[in-house]
Length: 201
Image (cartoon, rainbow, N blue to C red):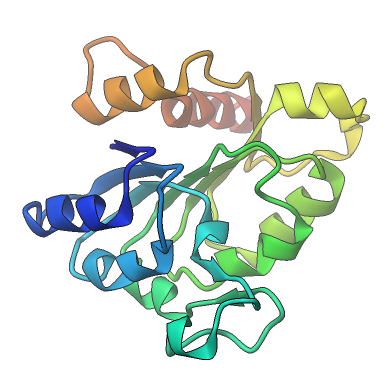
């Protein structure tokens, strides 16, 4: 777990942890695309991070941009998808970080099966994700965002979709889940229970 830490320090610590499989990087300071080489040598299956942090501003000088930056306006270092080849669970809790423009990113992770997001554009985002990612078995959308949007939820019929309350304390939630705290159910477990109940009605 890294929170508001500088990129060089994150890199140094990860170099000492070659077998890390569950990682959270929140509000890192520095050029986050420089983490990619380090991430590529780790069997990371669970990640909590905003993928937009790997986007490179067009204002950055050409010699400072990553070599494999996408030609899209929203340049992203395409190596991140190979680096996270083992990724199965992705959580993006940054408020408003996941909009319709980022849906296509998810299709590039070959083993991705579980996604949890906050979004201000639920109607625009949910269906494109579910349609584009046939291997996805669970998409969690946190309900406080949907309530604030005043959405009619009757159109959400895909049984892979789960609507949950946002964790009251995301940091404690992550630590309890990562440590396997006894009798603790993280939102992945709660989502799995809801899907099981829905498919066995």
